[in-house]
Image (cartoon, rainbow, N blue to C red):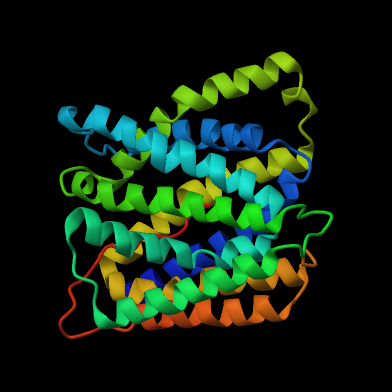
Length: 306
C-alpha cells in the first residue's frame, strides 16, 4: 500500500475517532463536572506528550517562544476546554459534532484579520453556507431541550466559543510551528495548561469529588487523553505532511458525519427539520471549502481537538 494511501487512511481514522469522541464526552459529562473531566484529561495527556517528545528526541521549544506559547495555551487549551466541556454538557453530542464547521469559519476569519490571508472564492461560498448551517442549528435548538441536553441553545453557543478559541490558537500558532517541532509545541502548550488544571484537580481532590468519579468517566478520560489528544493528532499531522492540506479537508468531512450518526444511533439524539437542514448545509460547506482552486495556496488544516 502506498505511503500516501496509508496517510489518508490514518487521517480518516483520526476524524472518525474525533467524531465519536463527542458521544464519549457527553456520556461522561452526564455524571462528572466539566472542569473535573477536562482536568483529568489534560493531566494525563500532557505528561504523556512530554514523554513522547523526550523518547523520540524532538527538539526543545525555542526559548523566545516559550512564554508567548504559555499565553496562547490559556486560550487554545484552557479556555477552549472550559467552553467545550460546559457546552457539550448542555447540548446534544450530534449538535456539537456538526458545529465543527465553526472552526473552518473562525479560522478563515482570523487568518484574514490577523494575517491578511486572501479568502478564495470557494472558501467564501463555504463560509456563507457554513454560517447559514450553524445559525439554523443554533436557532433550531432553542426550546428543543431534552433531559440530557437541558439548554441546547446556550450549549451550542459555548461550543462555538470553544471553536473560536481553537481557531485563534491555530492561526497564531502557525508562526510558532514554522520554527518549532509540532510534537514539541503540542507537549509544551498542554503542559502549560496544567498551571490551571492541576489546581482544579487539587480542588476536586480536597472536596472528595475526585474519588467519586465513576469507572466509566475514568475510562472516558483515558480514552480522550490517549486517543483524541495524542493518537489522532499524530495521525493528522503525519497525514498533512504527506498528502497536503487539500486532501486533509476531504478527510475532515468524516468528523461531523460520524459524530451526527453516533449521536443519533447511540445517544438517541432527536432528528428535527432544522437539524437535517443545518447538517446538510454544514456538510456542503465543508465540501465546497475543500475544493481546490488553481489560484489557491496550500493551507494548514487542523482537526477538532474535542
